[in-house]
Length: 457
Image (cartoon, rainbow, N blue to C red):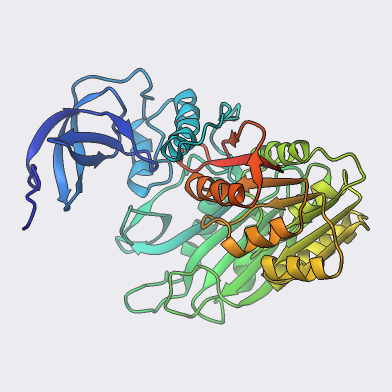
């Protein structure tokens, strides 16, 4: 029997916002049927229109705020485009409320599992905007003109933007300058429908401490017309640029970067520092986008590990070595493993760059390499994990437990997989022994990072 939803599409209703989803959408109930609505905060009474009706939940859009939450932030008219593009989905919430929301997300997930664990208040930023050190901006034709901006949510319609709010202001300035140069040189923007055109994206990376900038021009074609003129104008207008690269992506795909990268000017990398270590960052390197909060996050991981200089540490998702090198200054030996071979080569270069001789890196799946190290008799005191959003494979947890470290430090970017993995660790004898500490790596968005310490029974 088909269950009829108590609401209809395009109909108008009023209701009180009860809660927020993990994406920051307001939750309103009509006859116990949930509707998820952007730009709505708990406690607010709103008038809304239903935009989508599903079997068990639907979506709506605010028409009028009948009452206003004390947690609501004022949004300037020019910033409304940011909401359309999904760049700053929490910009309508004052920053202290954003921090509480992130703490509450972890607490709610733990409550569902009946685990009695403490979550500390989220560590925030003094300036929770203009923090991102990397941008990958689509370039498209809008009304007959080359434009840079961001896609309207759930579409590939470009919203032209010049102030991205969460990016370093030097990046915003550089994107406008590059846009104008590309326009002046008559470079044709890429068209997704026809797969024609030249320029697909502009990428900018900005060092936080060293004031170096990389400009990346991602092209559909192998050649970039007027490349010399474009490079000359960029370097004249942006004297801090130390690297200009062309990346070729001729595939009809949503993946931004392709397999071929050519250096048009300067070096193939820029440099930046984290906790006293210097890093080479290439166009395709994974490097945390919020350097201020990353230092807090990694210092927390070092503190939770309780390093005294005598420990052997395994970093199970080492990337280009950012956590490994931070730990290496406080440990006896650090062993890093990463499935991306080019990242491992970068990690080795970065260790050499910092004169760190107590690091060892391998390209492999973490669980396989840990089993190999165990066979070789390696006995870690601490294992650090910083997995992607999908969390840890069950086999990695088994491999970690088999090595019997005293501590596991879990750096998480997804509370739901963190809570699942805490339960799995409990099954192999590891339990949380300190408050879970959220860190706000991505202000104005719902994303949450955290550090959790687990110790063996």
